[in-house]
Amino acid sequence: MANVVIVGTQWGDEGKGKIVDLLAEHADFVVRFQGGNNAGHTMVVNGEQFISHLVPSGILQGKTCFIGNGVVVDPEVLLNEIETLKNKGISISPENLMISERAHVIMPYHKQVDHAREKMKGDQKIGTTGRGIGPAYEDKATRRGIRFVDLLDSRSFEDKVRSILDEKNFYLKHYMNSETVEPESVIEAYKDYTQKLAPYVTNISIVIDEAIKEGKQVLFEGAQGTHLDIDHGTYPYVTSSSTVSGNACCGSGVGPGTISGVMGIVKAYTTRVGAGPFPTELFDHVGDRIQEKGVEFGATTGRRRRCGWLDNIIVRNAVRLNGLTGLVITKLDVLGGLDPLKICTAYEYQGKTMNHFPADLKVLAKCKPVYEEHPGWNEDISKLKTFEELPENARKYLKRIEELSQTPIEIVSVGPGRDETVVLKNPFA
Image 1 (cartoon, rainbow, N blue to C red):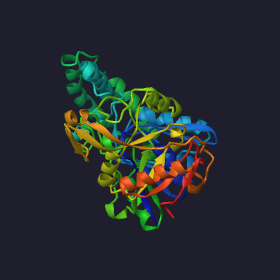
Image 2: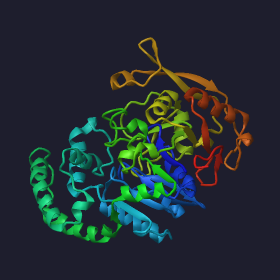
Image 3: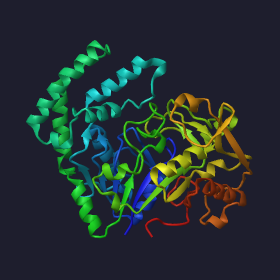
Image 4: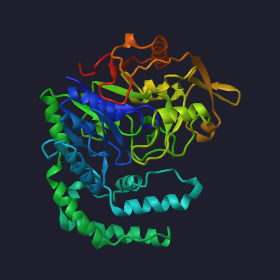
């Protein structure tokens, strides 16, 4: 029996969706444990692209999927996503998709506050997706949130909405100079959402616990990446949830003793969406080439991703924070044709070498990457199936990543398709 956590090691967009889809074949359950529809997982199956924002990627494999209590859910987005997947021939019902009764609900006023705040900040904005994720987690922390279990009690839900909007509308109108939200329209819309989603809502902690005791295998699907973690990332340019592996337990209602492995997804280079320091970012034709060949646009926002060389400082940071037992290298094919390739092995700050990821963003912004160079390759690797078939320089590049991170590589993605993958070790085997 194996229960495996999948997390991103960089700033998200590492290709977790494809890997979850790939490994879901060997799992019985797939659990999303944090984040909201500010994350998008892209999967390509038989040439067709699927993008999920809330429904766990394992749904494409026909697995039982769970949206954990650590997720914040926009009911309208979830219903639209369910309908879109159904129209593509994917079977979804309360039998194979369950929502934690303790998961918090994104409300219209969360999105209104999100947009108004970013507008007020102007050039100092964080670069949120505007989906209301941060304000929803904020209300959760201040005990002003609405959970799915609250939606099921209509009288209680109506009272909470009216009470909360007294405060939110005052804030929106008098501080943010923004439009207010009318409570009755919210109540009516969410009555409809509740009616449609109520059959999916249950205590998923009990369901997962019983399944694990029966010997079933569980894959825990993380969103975003380690360096967007609310505690350990480039704060305040982070997401509003804990993205590291430890939250897989908290965000789904299982104990840490149930976890048998943690896989860290590492893009063969580095990308970032939104604001915040990025030491290895490239501003030349190489960065443009990586961006174009890698089709580096956000699955959720469509925003162009900033691109740079692989930064081993942040990979090693992710290894420690997540307790990684194995690495998955994605988009190795994108580096084909580039020579030389570079890996950042340290930072140089005020004439001194730094080997750790600093908490102070003023320091990080002034860090210069210390690179080592590696010869590239020109061959098309997208159809290769074994490590031995890869070009010699590609193998050397991967081996160096293993050495620097002190973590074994178990899977290598050589293309966007599910079948364009080299599996060295299956974590569920």
